[in-house]
Image (cartoon, rainbow, N blue to C red):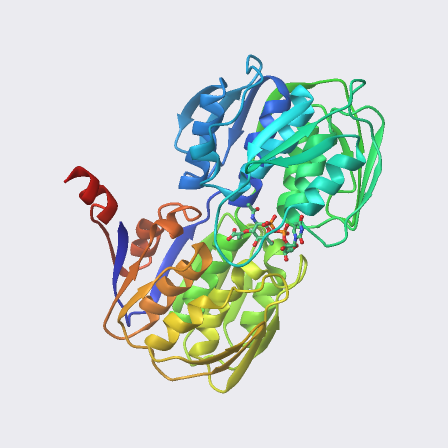
Length: 430
Ligand code: EPU
């Protein structure tokens, strides 16, 4: 069990360097299954979700060489058709990209239904709709998704998504790259990591255009070759440090960001009173007075990301006046509000809406990380609060934030990681 202990109440000052984008990397790594040759990938975040995916690929027979903490070479040329190990697959939601990758590479896939962060039902019907459109037969058997291409292979088609889905857009793209003919994904998601996956695949020989718009065109190619790629910086990690600086106060320079990707987060924090300067690949956040109230609604990109909802929620909990958050992507992503209320926040949640009456101060206590981003929000709250906050279940945070403790300490935060043997392990060892 991992917990973070934070002695809060001090502003943040200094520079933090952002890692590679988790949600790009979790698509790109499975997509290397399609490639005959060595992919050298830089700026891979060293986080637990990525370590798991590398372990899955390794167990499937990929050649994996870590050249440094953030550079990895993956060679899937000799991977044989195999079932990805279920006990690993079920620990990470993004293992659903193995369905598209195995289907594209071997003509069939068998992947355990994904696990991952728990905030309401997260169906994959749109992924399946896409695979079926390009000719696959998809069945759910005993907790596995089984997809099979017809004898003459997958063939390009038009897929119109019923909901804008990041996962379905990326998975269909992966599945269709080696299909014959042309696939169009209509009503596609436009997040920066969609563009990054398309750029990665194109660097390996794919013919994808339109990524970043709502229609993506994939002209099938016969094979992909090895090559070099560098993953984009993580939009949500950068936004998390922006929100931390705004909530705790201080002066923080956030380096290795693409300011264009941050626009709606920058705009919201400016509206709340933070002073934000954009540079070519950095953003500076200065916050030296109490934030102002604001409203926000989560939306697909370029709207305000659901993955930043809890972090901006902490800013609002400390702002002057009443703020409203409307969560339009997920049903139960407000569980962190109960934890924040334990720290003295005043938040009422009604299904998809949170009404936040800002308070002047939060007070440290024991809270839980309910999921990855909720955990990040608790850390921000702990840094901004008086007294000592312990964030339990911090392993969630480590799924998606590289060296968060070191990065925050570099900004002057008093934060320590404490690992204790988990109760189950103690019980079974005893
Ligand atoms: N949806 C469906 N059917 C589908 C797919 C999605 O109804 O087949 C619905 C979902 O239930 C949700 C909406 O569509 O209401 C959007 O879901 P999306 O598919 O975009 O989400 P996802 O692919 O499951 C990814 C990220 C999430 C992030 C969302 C939204 C990964 C591994 N996960 O999830 O990231 O919240 O996109 O941007 O890329 C995180 O990083 O903390 C995280 C949870």
